[in-house]
Length: 330
Image (cartoon, rainbow, N blue to C red):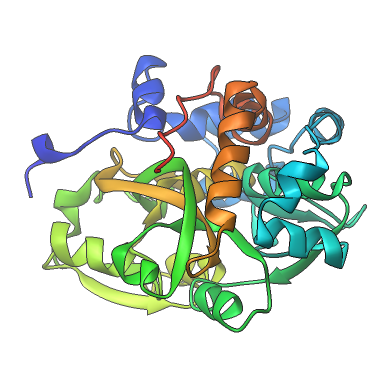
């Protein structure tokens, strides 16, 4: 596959503007850590760096303040949507999400709170409907269970870096998109053989089952040998153990892994493949789609979306300004 067919996301554009080539993001992540961590860029081995490195933490104070300042819908707006009214009547917002995504939804075991870009949007939506961002019941989901928790009525919505696809739209509905990504290649920091999608020929490549990764690998690297894993952690463990040479999934998840483990991994080459729009999963044909889309437009227009992105992602990955939010589908 020729590299000139590769598209670039706003993330990639900003990385290029900042002069980040292969491995450049890792250098930024290290620079954001303590001086001891940054010393790994001066000759320390990747294993030494990962052992001593400190994850780039979210600014919890700024994050919590932003969520607490979120808008609250008037009663007429809530009552006009049967989906939102049911949540208001129940007194809590049932959300399917993850607790292990460093940039999008990560559990702080000290205070028991989820923080990140997805977590923040779900909390802002809870505040918008219920007037209280803490009135959330969380069900942990994986790539394989996101549809089922919606179709069986276990949750009201799913926020989980959830790619909008035609196959999924047969089972559920999506609000958004609220974010756009592409695929990325994660390798161990000392891997010099893989520097882009063209280098995956004949390599063992990990992908998450239930994600868009396996299909993208089949299209862009058809001679790669794909191994599917249920979770991000399982795929990265296989990479660390040398059972696979590379791991492909949405590049934003890889950015989180690099931020969490400075010196342990690197991003091999630019993002590739089709634009991957993230949506908020809702029950099939729910009138919640219109309600959530109106909410998303509001947080984008008021600048809350960009502020949340900067706190959850930009400030932790060395990107100075938020990308433009994608157009919300009618």
